[in-house]
Amino acid sequence: MAMRNLKHPVFWPPFLILIASVSYSLIDSEGFIKNASALNSFLLDKFGWLYSISTLGFFGIVVWIYFSPIAKVRIGGKNAKPFLTKWRWFSITLCTTIATGILFWGTSEPLYHLHAPPEGLGIQPNSIESMRFAMSTLFMHWTLIPYGIYTAAGLLFALVYYNLKRPFSLGSMLYPIFGQRVEGNIGKTIDAICLYSLVAGMASSLGTGILTIAGGLNTLYDIESSTLILTIITLVIVATFVLSAISGLMKGIQLLSDWNIKAFIGLAIFVFICGPSLFILKIGVEGIGEFFQTFFQRSLYVGLSPEDNWAESWTIFYWANWLAWAPVSALFLGRLSLGYTVREFIHFNLIFPCIFGAVWMMIFGGTSLHLDYFGVDSPIYAILQNEGIENVAFAILGDFPFPKIVSFIFLIIIFLSFVTASDSNTSAMSGLSSTGISPDSPEPSLLIKIIWGVTIGAISLIMITNSGIEGVKMASNLGGFPAMFFMILAAWALVKLGRSPEVLE
Image 1 (cartoon, rainbow, N blue to C red):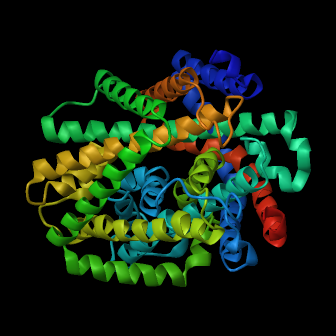
Image 2 (image 1 turned 90 degrees about the vertical axis):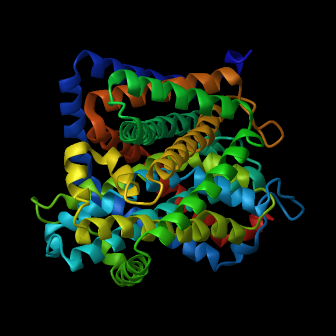
């Protein structure tokens, strides 16, 4: 019965392409990495400017929507009632978007920027200036722009799905431009392309989670990372998020996200109180000042010099990553918003998550910078270089009271974060691959969820065991390229709706 509900033109093309790519990587690992790296470098070099200007444009459109008449429109119609409380809505939104990333990169990314800032900006490495740059860059990479991308995509889907009553499809997001033409083969093609993009991005994210958990096990229990250990971690994560996805939107994910965000808040408070609190406040304030002062310059920085590839390695890499996730994540984020207004949608998908992300980066990024720059016995950057990025957070937490307990709690938070994010996107991917999905029947079949969960886990494992963190970054970039063009069209569609809010009433 489950396979009868399969939307074959959407499911099979990305699935077979992914299987072929994995097979190629197993047969000729060096050749696969070489070719993928060459394609990745080509896309970043030739289209980096488009990544930068389009993502800034998405954020600008969301700001315009917030102050326009459409902001008062209720998603689902005037009489629609929410099925989630505001707390549940916020916790699910936060934990299923980029909260997984801030765990992995929050402590390690600022070290890169402290010691190797972009040559084109003339910043002296390992200086107060580069420290300030590192903090402002964290705000750039983890607040307004990424959440602006998600908000634009999620809001558009919510409006066309609930207000315009269009099918559960990414093609429906382009209905304001192309009308019913997107509900045929064009829509199925869009769904298949974006499904491929998300699997690449999701495999990338899961890969970072597997590496971080492996680093935690090594730090806490001296369990050396190996293919066997990485495989076991992958199996546990995949099994857990598939079981959670099976339980449906109203059950597993709500419980997981509630536990997750409370653990996030508890750990952040602990690190702030026991860490360099005054320094965190100072570097946070200066970082915010520099962030707003240089917002347009930094968000559009692509590196003119051929030798300056900092933007390709960082900012453009992030924009590609968020774009890979955005279209299919929109299906999930849009579903949550029934009964709330457009302005409330922007509050809970952009403003509140940005505030949380900024505070988190101040605390954990500030602590990392302080220990590395001022510490005598904590060569954090040396740990990053010699032991791997996955060990940085645990090395930092080792300087706090009750290091074993705190590190174990951090390990649990990582696990919950990746399970929660994977749960939501597996549900959205499965829905996109299925027929008969509607507001009254929102859940796809069990078998399709299992197939996508196992596929993503296998791709992640193969990627990290063959090419490590560089493979993770390449997968994100390659997935984000086709999604970028879809998002440009989606932004156009959102502007059209914003100019005609009466069609949504």
